[in-house]
Image 1 (cartoon, rainbow, N blue to C red):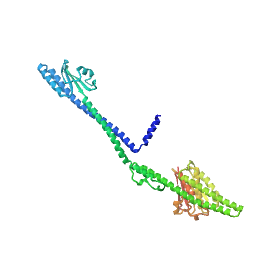
Image 2: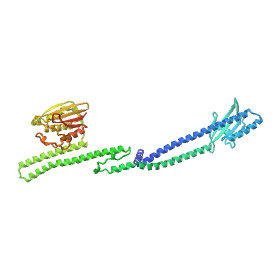
Image 3: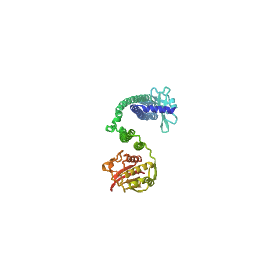
Image 4: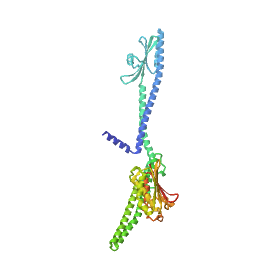
Length: 473
């Protein structure tokens, strides 16, 4: 129950407008600051007052001691009269209630309206102390002082002083009221001014909200970094721009994918339609029907393969395909792959030269597919009697495998396009083989991207094309 209430409070707090957040936060900080400042000022004022009264009290006690000692030393009747007048005059000059008592216990003089009797003062001050605080019945506060004065070992008298703290209490109460009023007024003004200031401060946030809201499918090229933002909002603008970059890139790839797919499917579907229309319009001959069905079957298989390849590339580009890396011996896998091409090698009079050693960390199935696609591409362009060289080695951080052929190489203007979808280059350069669907090398690039690796295409120094696949360790 208690945790549920805390969650509600947290939800309410975090759902409040930022301006109110800022105002309340500033209000609490300012209230705490003003409270601490008030306590400090009060402490300084009271300490100053106490020091001032302490100096006055010490001076007063010093004079009272002199009066008692003078009375004690001058014990003639004439001197008594003089000292009594002196005592009376001195008591009226000080803002303290004072009583002077002789060594025999006689009251020599006291301030008019002395609030406490001799016994009350003696009883209120502990025996081992000379000063004490005292609160009367009506709540009035006093500081009491009782000091004995000696001449050598002889008791010359006693001084009793009563400091009435009513004036000080009133000053402290007024100071507390002033501080409280200042804190309340300051808090209210802080909230008002902070709300006004926060509205102006948060204007860039409102502007950013409008800018983001204006972004749509037809305006993905819009970027927030073109607008000057406060330093705190620049990371948000940069993050949003990065998101827009990715969205725009994905949107372009999706549009290009749709366009490529529609363009490439148009030809095989048109062929299937023409083949079926011609078959249905011709004479009913079983051999012709069979041949037409075989052509239709080839077309369907070709289309299905192309669709499967396109889906693989799309999943790879959007990082949907799951890579299951494992470490395995590269030479063993290359041997299995090259063995599959033995029949094609005999037909084209092409041979392999393989030098692979080390282990590679990759998805085994994707590794096979990437190598097979590059080898198939090399076979397609290799002349009769040519050699396809496969070299692989493990370095400290990567495993590199290069596949080179002795074909016509890649035209310089085609090197930047070689891994694009449906790019087939110049079909006249093929050595008597059929052109593929233009997706094989795109699949290789997608596989290397999934492995955080790279594939590089270049022309060899002695002719032919060289493809290098780099797998991170």
